[in-house]
Image (cartoon, rainbow, N blue to C red):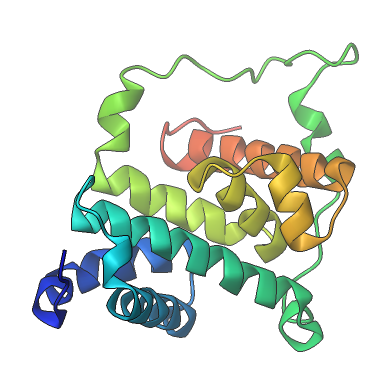
Length: 188
């Protein structure tokens, strides 16, 4: 199936928003989109029409995002701009002495599917993600948004499974606190 530039151009904004959400830097997102479109134009025969063009391009873009994240993680100059990880003891206040949820246990989330389609939810989620250390947010995005297995994340970022699991824990706790306050309106 032949792919033309005219076929790709209407999807550019969607791809850019997807990449920006993952990478949180406009120049990195634009580079990932450019690489995706170039890959599609260089190998148009790899698109066989079994999925939509948008789905196929998003699949390519996911790999470009992973490549970008790997470069950021491995480049000492880029990595030095990533702030340090917070101590997981910051979350101790959420639990009682036996390790169970304390008095501030998560509340039931009514109609979570509706929230996932709400643009305001995604704006709050994005702000919460940006409050996390970049490395933690990157690992969380690779696992929960891109759907990568922990083993694959560890290989890509050259970290241990224990380190990866700890970062995922910190990300989930950080999101829990931030969403509880900014989305559910609960105050500690």
